[in-house]
Amino acid sequence: MRLADCWKDYRIIATGDGMKLEKWGSVTLLRPDPQVIWHAQTDLYSHPGINAVYHRSEKGGGGWEVKKSFPQQWNVNYKDLTFSVKPMGFKHTGLFPEQAVNWDKMRALIESAKAKNPDRTIKVLNLFAYTGGATVACAKSGAEVVHVDAAKGMVERAGENARLSGINSGIRYIIDDCAKFVKREIRRGNKYDAIIMDPPSYGRGPGGETWKIEDSLYDFVLSCKEVLADEPLFVLINSYTTGLQPTVIKNILSLTLKDRTGTYDAYEVGLPTDEGIALPCGCSGLFTGNRI
Figure: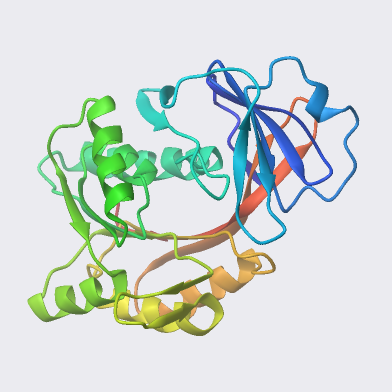
C-alpha cells in the first residue's frame, strides 16, 4: 500500500464501526467509510470537536447533521496546491486526499520529462476528472491538461481549485460523456502524452448508456489507447470499486498497452490514521513509459 502521509491540513483521527473521524483544516467531520469493518476503540460520536456527522438513510442516501457551526466551504493545502472543501450529498467533500500519492508521482514524471526537454509540451487527458485534484497537480508542474467530466458542477469546482492553486491557463475544461469525448478525439487524430481516469463503478450516460466497470473498463482503455502518444509518459487508472483488486487493473494495462514500451505497477492507496493503522482507500494501476 502507498500512503498519502505528507498532508498537513488533513488527518484521520480515529476509525471504527463503519465511520472515520477526519480533520479537514480546522473542521472535523465524521462520515461513513465502507472499509471500516472493525470496532471503534473510542466513542467517535463523543469527540468534542465534531462539526458535522453524515448519517445514512435506510431509504438510500443520507444527510449531514451539524454539531458545531463551520464554513459552508473552506480551503485546505497540500504542498503548493490549494483545494476547496465542501460537504455534499452522499457524504462527499469534493476531494480524495489519498490521491496525493498519485499527484506526487505524476508531478515527478512530468517535471523529469520537462527537465530533460524544457521545450517539450506534455499533454494530459484527465477523464472522469471530478473536481480536478489530478488536473491541478499536473498543470502545476507544467502540463497542458484536458479535463473531462459529465457533471457541470464538478467541472466548475475544478476550475475553482485551479485558480486557488494559482493556475490561470493550461487547462481546457470539457463537460461531456467521457466515452463519447474519446471517440471524437480519435476521429480528430488528437494524441496525449498521459491519460488519467477515475471511472465510476456504475453509471449512465446522457443517452441512457450503461457503464458497469467490470464490463466496460477494458474496452474503454482500449479506446483510450487510440489517443495515447506512441511514446507515452504515463497512464493512471484509479478505482474505488470494492472487490476490484490492483492486479486486475495492472492486467488491463499490460494487455491493452502491450505495444507500448514501459513498466506496469498496481497498488492500494491509503491514508495513515492517528491510531497507528492504515485505511485502504481504493487502488491504482500505473503504466510508465520508458521515454520520460
